[in-house]
Length: 97
View 1 (cartoon, rainbow, N blue to C red):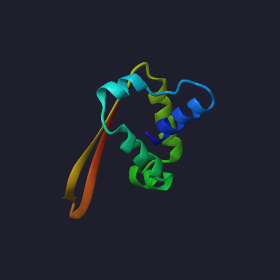
View 2: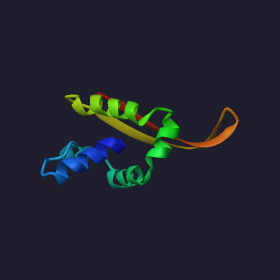
View 3: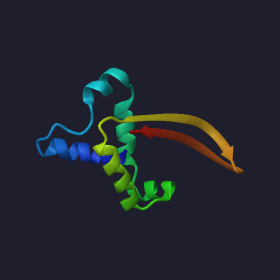
View 4: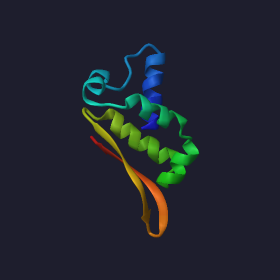
């Protein structure tokens, strides 16, 4: 998602219309501003460490996502839990093209 937010901002900054469907987001979502702030504040080092992928692999997935005719993205927070004996706060995000 960080790449999509960055690419959307770059598109708008260069005079484009952006990559995100703002009308759909405004009508069908809530909390997008807070989510965008969180995404912008999260460093690439943290993202790479948490996903266990290289930035190039993440960029490749973002390219596929960005080129899709339609896409869906959801995020859900879960309470702190334990998984494999480690306390953790879990957040799930689902993307479908």
